[in-house]
Length: 309
Ligand code: GLV
Image (cartoon, rainbow, N blue to C red):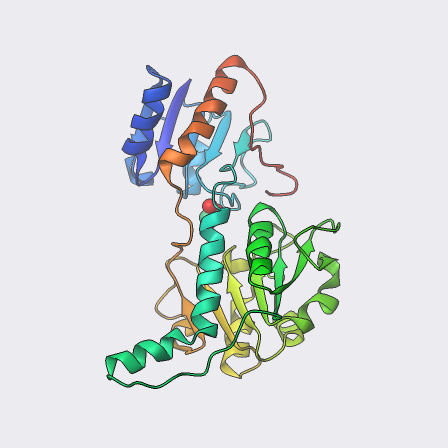
C-alpha cells in the first residue's frame, strides 16, 4: 500500500498513522502543489480539499479517504467507479451542535448589543428572547442533525426535521420528506441546514423556498453554501424577507470580497471553522480501515456514490 496524504497537517497525520501501522509507504503533501508529478503506485489517498486534476493523475488509486464529512468535492465524474470513497466517521456532531446553539444563543441573548454597550460603558438591558417553545427545523436529520435536534429539545425548543426518506425520529416532534418543504418551512423560527451537497440538494433552497419562511426566521447553514441559491438568499436578506443568515459555508470559499453577503448586517459569516477534523480523533478510525484494506476486507464509513454521501 502506498499512501499519499494531501492536507495542510499531512506530517501530523503521517506521524499518527506511523505510530499504529509502522513501515507504511507514506508520501505527504501539505497542498496540491507538493504532490509528486509521478503518482504511479499510489493506491490510497487521504485528503481534505485538493485540486481535482490530481485525481485524474492517480491512475492506480483504489481508495480515496476524506478527512471530512462532506465528500461532494471528491465525487467527480472521472473518478472510476471501482475507487472506494470513505468519509470521516461521525466525530463532528458535538462541534457542529455547539456552533449552531452558540450562534442561536448569540441572537436570542442579544450578545451583539451587550458587547456594543460594554465598549461604550453603557449599563442597559437589551431586549432578549428565549429558545423555549421556538420551532427549530433541522433540514437533514442524519447523525449531525439528530444531535442538533437533541440539544435543541433540551433547551425546550420544538424540533421539526426533514429526511430524504422520512420516518419518525425520537428527536423530532414532526418529520417531513424533502418534497414536503411547503409544510415544513412556514412555521420555523430557526432553520438549520445539515444536509450533504448532492445533485438533489444543490440549490434546493432558492427564492421560492425562502419566501415560505417567516420574515423573522434565522437560517444557520453548517452544510454547504451551494444548497442555497446565494443570489436569492442575498435578495431575501436585503429586502427583509428573511430575519438573517448565519453560515460557516459558502458556494466559493474563501467567500470572495465581492460577495454581497459581507455587506448585509443580517448575514453572519464564519470561515468554515465549525468542526475542523481533530487528527487524533480521526486517525484511529482511519487506521482501522487501513488494517481492513490490507486484509482485503470491506471498509467502514463508505460513501454511497449514487446518493453522494
Ligand atoms: C466539513 O465541511 C466537512 O465536510 O467535514
